[in-house]
Length: 341
Picture 1: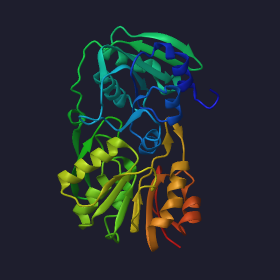
Picture 2: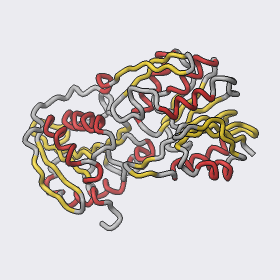
Picture 3: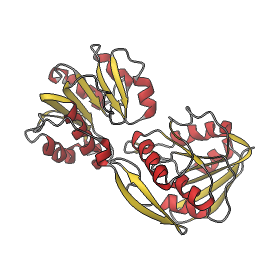
Picture 4: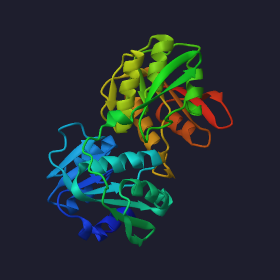
């Protein structure tokens, strides 16, 4: 068990509470599935995790919310792992409850630093009689039985829309629980779009970590440039597709862990990359992207990246792409540009 984290160890310590067919909602580590050789249902919003989960024999793996027909049979126990965003927890709990047979049980597991104490209120809205069954190593495990048996869960019912405006361009943007900057235009992306307002970027263009598709749809409206988008998160892939459709934007939206699924080469790569893994700062994702980006940029092609000023990206950009210059700077954010060696 030494290779498992505290949350995974908490689940295995309480495996006596798991009965019948099992569903894991929000699972990231494929190694955990090997502890249940009978198999079950594994749901993840992370595309890299999904690719690894697919390799485990006996398990049905789903990227994002299951579509009709993807779940072969109901489950007796559903385990929900605590997500970063509180809105996404309600989404996961409702999804998990819809997967259960009548009388099935729900387990919620998370660390204190992730907010498990506050999450219990959301759990009790779905399963009012939930109780804490374990608390150790900064983790809590809660067990409950959903009050209602609702099998009609639909991701489409959770989609919301909001309007953003940037540099005179108005755009309707789709949102789902857990997606970055839902309901607003974040400061970093606004600064990045402002830097793109004066000169049309050279195509073809890729938006890495595209989120809800704001940058690509905005560029199509502003410059008539088609922009491909990639993101590792299921909600982002769904929302970017919806945003593109409503804006009548061209360009392909692709799920990808980093640039692993990307085969094309581009004249311009644009990004507002994530720098969190759970609740911790993690710049390794962006460093891996920069390593890959050099292979997907045409010679002389431009990388344009916005990030918080405290992150060590100029050095990494220079190392992997080329000389880095600052296009725009505010007290919080900087927009960097570099052309491939």
